Amino acid sequence: MKLFESIDWLLIGTRYMSWAIALLGIVGSVILFFANIPLGIGSAMVFAASFFLAISVTLLLLPKQLAKGVLEGNKRYLTGAITFVIALVIMFVV
Image (cartoon, rainbow, N blue to C red; front, side):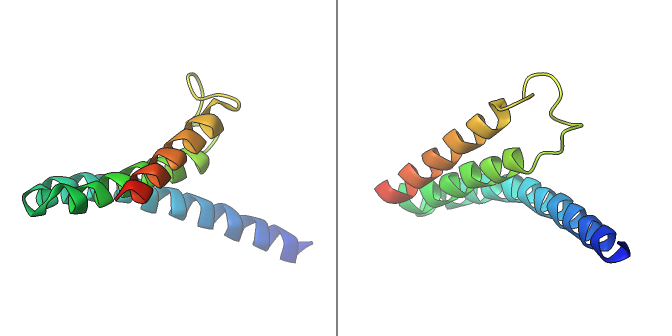
C-alpha cells in the first residue's frame, strides 16, 4: 500500500511540475514571438503556435482548486482542446 501511495504522490508532483513548466512556456513563447518578428513572420508564428500549445497543456493540467468558476467541469478540457487545434493549424500553415 505504501508503494501505491508513493506512486500517487509522484504522479501528483509530476503533474504540478508539468503545469509549472507550461506556465513558463507561455511567458517564454510570448517573449520569443516579439523577438523573432524582425526575422520574419514564419519564425514568429512558430512561437505563436508554441504559445497556444503551452496554453492547452496548462489548461489540461490545471488543478481543480484553480479551475473553480469559469473553467469548471469540461470547459477547461474543451478550451484546452481548441487551443491545441489552433496550435496544430498554425504549425500546419507555417
